[in-house]
Length: 172
Length: 227
Image (cartoon, rainbow over all chains, first blue to last red; front, side):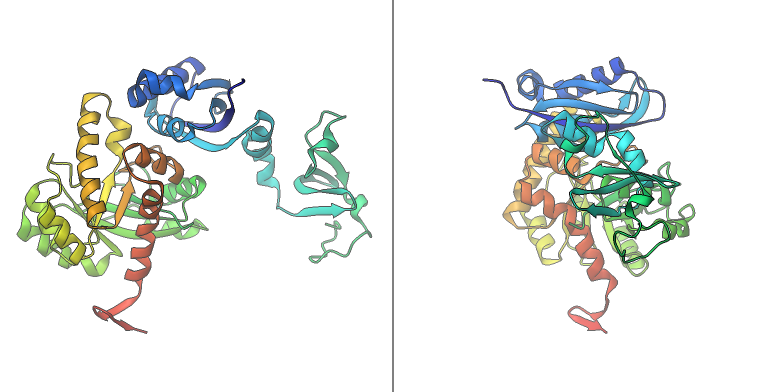
């Protein structure tokens, strides 16, 4: 049977630049010294992706606590002070990326957490640029065919359809 | 959950200004932090700037460092009025005992630092005076191998004592820069590996907030509040 997995999104705060090899070495050595060889083997920790700041780790679904502690014990990477911040865990890479990983996070910062609900199109606004609105749909199947992350809408789609409580001129 | 970061040292003792620490802590999911420099580093760098960081509560505390029992009693009663939370930098047996017997003290931090563990008499008087035991998890993060093993042994003994006498516990990580901050969940995971139970670790992170909300009210005498 296939062992179950959890994925962990993390962020590296570091005073220098972080290489993937250095980071891995630090994580594995922190893990080895904290939990020993047997404990480490049960964690099944593996780096899936790392872009220099954000990354994804895979681990065993029942050993999240141990993996978190191992990551918390990383004190420096490549000779620079660093800290690993776990952003969140999830059962699939896809859900993890959508929830915690940067592109969304950066866009999420522009979002004002307003929601749009028109017939079957529901979701929260990821960003607004002029009249264009990018929407993170609640139903992920909506973006499946086009292979995009967001639904593209405009403020004209919303005009006149609803009376919004805050009644701003862009119709949101 | 109102988790509070505790044992956080700002400039000039640490390397970050209070506002930077507040910002970093907010991102990690704390609803408040207690900035508590050791006595001797009271004059913080731009403490008023933290008011501009929204959605996080910043409380001011102090960690009393004293040579002997008399100095400890003098310093705690002098500092009690000006800080919301008063802790003692534990270590030697005499200081640990004096801290446990002092009702002005809120938290006795790292009593295991001098390689001496809590005794039954200490735990009993800590219970009487409502002194919490602070478990500083930074050795778990910074040490490796033998020293860490030794530390874990000491912690286990203090933990058993605190549990037996139902003393309140606090967990912290001796933060001196934003890179030392660990999220509440990370601290809970570390504490659980060190032997705490899940609910104990959770209560330990909530405890500073409870103490602060009590200390912010005005008390005329024990049990008598000015409204």
